[in-house]
Length: 242
Length: 235
Image 1 (spheres, rainbow over the protein chains, first blue to last red):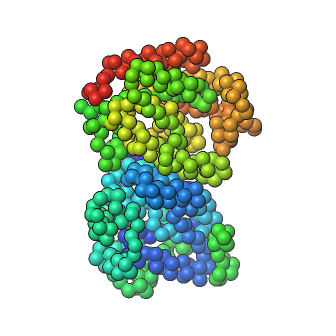
Image 2 (cartoon, rainbow over the protein chains, first blue to last red):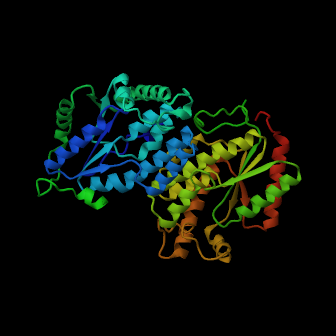
């Protein structure tokens, strides 16, 4: 499979910036992204969040597939790519055109790690996501597996079937299955760091230390991009969505 | 050697070694008469004692409802639509086509990946990309292509009622009204199918001929194929 038709070719040509965070569950990436959003807004930047499952129709199909356990590794991968494609076309690209800082909690690398952990072909899934705009900044939150598992499992969550990787029949116990599935995902993530040049964050550091590093990582990309005339509270992206 | 192979890496977790049966594909544009020919072929094969199963676009358990809803409101981006169709196809491949082949059926498929590739390419998808997306598909035993020109298609479609929004490519759109868009859209679909026919070696059936002549040729070709390549035998 030729590299020319894999992910990585669609460089962001727009004035906006795309910042994405990746990592296994419990790595603390969502907390850091929320803090970053607050700070960016206080600095007067236009900020929008891109959420997973943006299209209600695709969301309904995904929910149906999960609930009735109809999804296989292949269809799990494709339905998530369908949803992601809709997000890119209707959500991310328009916001980038408008000059916003677009923040995404998880991006294509989640699919690369999770789908391959399910047995999907590595090259195929990279080709599948060719339509995705490459991020301005991609940060991988690296947490030891035991730390991340403890953060998630100490709350005694009821793990969902696919979330726990139960479709892979790794272990009949959902918690054991979840641990083994997360471990596989982490192995894939570690391979993605050098492959795609992801920035890494030590997710065991205190929250405020990580946040300072994250701001330093993004700062060079903010030079010369649009700011709101009002210094704070300008949340055009959110208003539009509501 | 396995009876079936996929174009690329195949379906994750799926062993192809125990598949027998036959995979017969009928391709062609909207309104060319595929349904008629599929029905006749099915009756012919059942007469001969073969077990026949059938599938076609958007008939998956997983995605058919969602695609129908998305078409009603045109609420999905073009590329997301391409991938929604790929999801539907993957579900049918895994849940309908593969089990039927495993059970030794003749699986007749009313359109396969090729129509889906054509509609994606016409909507701006890169041909290499969409071919890679569908590289998990099984190579059929044969692809019959009911070939017709767009202008010859018009009277047939009109005889069945007004032009369909999607069959006219109005989501793109390709003309001032349904007629113009239909002719332009179907013309471009046919152009892409012609290119795929060359690349993948389709069996061409001139669809401007008499319906009985076409189905006679189709039935005879499939019968010959089934005799020549018994179920479970090596290719």
